[in-house]
Length: 401
Image 1 (tube, rainbow, N blue to C red):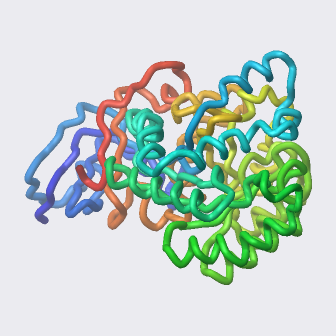
Image 2: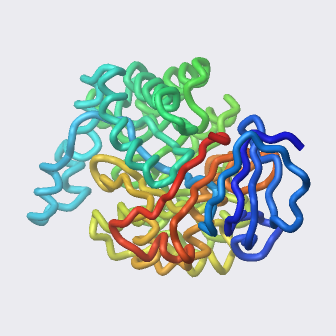
């Protein structure tokens, strides 16, 4: 078999769901052809391969390229002043109700050009890429009107042209109520459903639709209206659910077959069971939990009990998780939420791919999938979440390069 590139003498965590644990292959090899995995397995079973280039990785670990499945990378401005207010005792809800929070980022983002949004986001994206991230999801939600929402999504797509990374875009118009809505949430949701969402879909700017279902954001009924339109337009849905209270967000997400429900600090057993039945991924965001100094932890025991797939992500955003390190996120998932090493590694690869609806393309090392790899200079994979402030990435491969 003729291949472009062969990585040999490796310990490989394939994440193949048909195998136990992380699907580890000792003394393995991976071959790539035309950007896809042509063969993977033990060297002793390797067929005759003619490779243009062979790389001896000297016994290092290879995992699938990492996936950050929940970010708000594209925005303008900073919220450092609000950080100061929180340190002085103000709560997230108090800042939001006083016109700060998301709306302060909305003001800055509306004033920024697409070029400026791309320039501001690139350093955040570069930080993720430097830690082995090969796929990233980027949400809108800081425009809250059509022009800026579309500009955010175009900027996100542009990032995928400027850097060797796969970008999935998510329309989050139902993130907060814009000031011009004058408190009328129903009228804003009606405009979003009638104008914004159809135009975004028509332009092909979004791969999914998200909403923030919470007391300071939108109700279950308003969220359901958005999801109904998304479904009619053929777009999958995701949901910021049960972060600050239990309004039944996980159950509603499951009812609409959501790819994921994210945050989930207040999810109850009914919500976890519904997610399991629907195949909805639980995306945990320890950066927000840490930064907001929350005390209510996600229902990890319930997700394990009901076998809900668990992913983890940075939630990189200016207000509640200014975090652009997926490695640090992995450590937080271990220390704050007590996830196991296997749960963490699967959570930033296979299950993160599932949360984006891209498991058929990325997230595991199987023939036919995109050859996205992270090569680690570690003795055991536990070192990825174990060490703080240390990046053991030896090499990153995206689409075989």
